[in-house]
Each structure stands twice: as structure tokens, then as C-alpha cells.
Amino acid sequence: MKMLLLALLSALPALATDLPGHLGLQLYSLRGIPAWDAKLDEAKTLGYHVVEGGSLPAGVTAPQYLAALASRHLHMVSMHVDYDRLVRDLPGAVAEAQALGVAFICTPWIPHEGDFTAAVADQAIANFNRWGAAFHAAGITYCYHPHGYEFQPQADGATLFDRIAQGTKPENLSFELDVFWAAKAGQDPTALMEQYGGRWALMHLKDIGQGAETHVYTGKAPSSDDVAVGTGAVDWAAVLHKAASEGIRWYFIEDESEDPLQNLPKSLAYLKSLDR
Image (cartoon, rainbow, N blue to C red; front, side, top):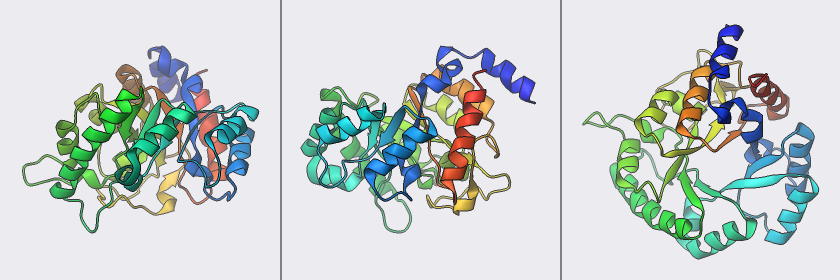
């Protein structure tokens, strides 16, 4: 099996065969570390050079944060910004992203009560098109990160993710594919990339445990479902092959398991091994 995996990866385009050079850490993985600068210390210790972060910590300026990154030889290429912040202060979010020099902004969740509905999706579509146009004008790619609730089948056989993808302009909205949450919702990540080719800019590398419940449309899962990359049910050869052909720009390991500090080194070592 390992020989087959290596053979498949050896045939991939340059982006995938140089995976370590396009591989970073989503800092949410270090949520158990309270201090923002200690998170950066840990990212460096773990061997990362690229990170995906969030909005600036309270009381920290963009120059201070950039200096902290530089002193640790870290570079933040992408950041998550909450939906509600963009509702309240789109210009401020654009200015912060510009000050930090990130190439990508991603919204990870659409607020909703109970089931995710077409009405909520339609409001998000309008917002995404407006917000994406503002980021596009600033030279930044705006993305949405599905969490699984968008994939619940509708009466017409489509999903509300289909509705969002079809209702937004490609120049205004790209997507960040979280492999775990796609699998949790019963989706095939490679099929999603095929269906919406050209829309996927970023990827969260996250594995789902063998035998974990799927076709779950809540965006929630037991932390035990999240396992070190390469130890779960995901066919990484197929996923990375397709990601390379779709031009995924950056891959971020994100760990939402019970013990991320134990799993993150395993995930990184496994993914680096695929380049040998």
C-alpha cells in the first residue's frame, strides 16, 4: 500500500511533490495554549514556517504581530475572520488583512440557529459577494470554509453548499476545503474538488477515524473522531492528487483532537514522508 501511495504521489504535479513547501499550521490547533506569543513559539518548535491565524489578539498591533512572526521565522499567509465581524466592520477587516500582508481571508462559519436553511444561505450569498468584492479590490482572496451543515440534501437533490457555490461569483468567493468536515458530512473530498473545479484555494489536512459516524450535518463531532493525518479513513493519495490538479495554494494541518500536541508531529511527519 505504501509503495502504491508513493507511486501515485510521484506522478503528481510540482505543487504536491513539494508539499512540505506549501504546508502550514492552522493556529487554532494550539487553542490549549492561552498566550498568543506562546502559540507562535510552539508552532516554531513543531517545525512550521507557515501559519494560518485569526484576527489580531486584543491589544496587539499588526506591526507587533508581524515582528513576532518574523522573529520566529514564521509567515502568515491566511487568516480566519468571523462572519459577524464582517457584518459589523468590513473596512476594518480589510485594513487589518492588508496590514498583516495575508493573501487569503477565510470565514469559517455562518451563524445559524437550529438547521441551516436556504434563507440563511441566501443572506450569506449576498454577503459573500459583497465582502469578496471588497477583498478582491484589495488584492486578497476571500474564502469560505464549509463545516458540513451545508451538505444536508435538499428536496431537489442538491445541497445548500451547491446553492452557495452557484450563487457566488468565483472572483468574489473561493473555498477552503476541510477534509475532515467534508468526510463527516458524507462527502467525497475529491468529488467536491471535481464538481467545483477552480474554486478551491486552500485545504485543511485533517483525518477522520476509521468507523466514525458520517452523514452528520451539524458541523459538530466528538474530538475523538479527529485523528493524526495518515492514521484514519481518508485516502490521502487521491485527495492530494486531486488537490494538486486543482491548484490548491496552501495546505494547513488543523488538529481538533483530544491531544493536538501529540498528533501534530505525527501528522507533519506523515505528510513530509509523502515527498520522499
